Length: 456
Image (cartoon, rainbow, N blue to C red; front, side):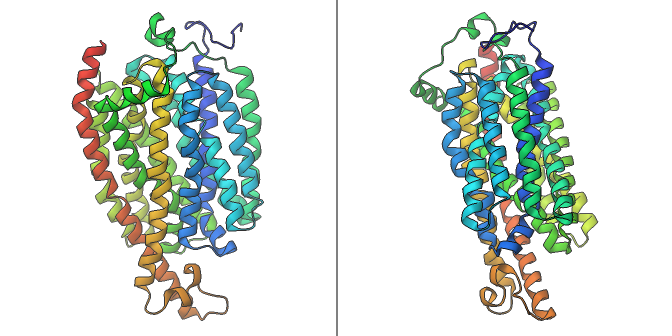
């Protein structure tokens, strides 16, 4: 195919190839994250980490460079080749995943997680921009959902295979196994996928728009009230969602006394199925309903976020493993109804040359509030509630929430029970953020109709 670096004609552009390759990269993106989440309890025991340290590794440490470089990458994506940015980012986070498997301390894990975060920040903003260039506005959420199906696929694949590999070898081998494929896929992607013409789905005028200065972009966002509410709602939803995803395998292992393979497989299955259902229902459903009323993307997100908390509360306090799994699947499906519509709304509320930056700004706040603070909150509160649940000096009797070597069976059981209770209560508190997020989406809804009318 004869295509230039600057793009291809709309009719000749290999849209399906681009979507498929972005899907594969998304699979790797979330598989690498799921490996750490699935093996967190094993890593904790091997390196004697506290729940707070686990929260930092899965949250704030990961989020620091992710958030710091996210907006600059979005601004770069308005001006330079987006496919090269995505390929470079994929290679970076894959190399850092390899380094994670070689870490021998909290500090070394933190360094590798920082680089993983920096690399993964380069995926979503340029991806959303490329998808919007080849997709009409009433199909952007659903088309982006096809790419983001890599999220449940990656989580299921990463968690399931990580548990299997760790049970046969060790947790370090799992990270090595997932780091190598990303480097190969990055090279293939930059070789076979052409750069689409910017704004081609919005007409000739949009494709010729210059990239605006940073100040102009920030003023445009600040003056766009529905966009501000959408970004706020998605960021707050991310607080609870990331808290649950990063500690779900830990919760299942402690509460139901599961081994690493069983806990990882359960985490992967619950996350993969619920994300797929919520993503598809939320994206395709609201795209379809938005043809009747443009407020449906915000309404759909709010409905899911209101329904999720009580079901999660029941799941975290279920008396049986089977009941907890069923409730977690239902709750997760409702929760993920916000994910696809949020990105679609951001794309539709901004002009072509601001879309990558808009998604980058959302990703920055989502990462700081969700990935940065959520797991740290849950990890810290788990330590606090665990200490309250233990009849005695928890820090001395159960260092890092684990019974010391040589402890009696009774002491080990008491430490395990307190540790499980602490995680249960911390997760129960975290899901309250969904109700605040739902309020934000409801506030955004009226502005969506007004924007659609003025853009028609």
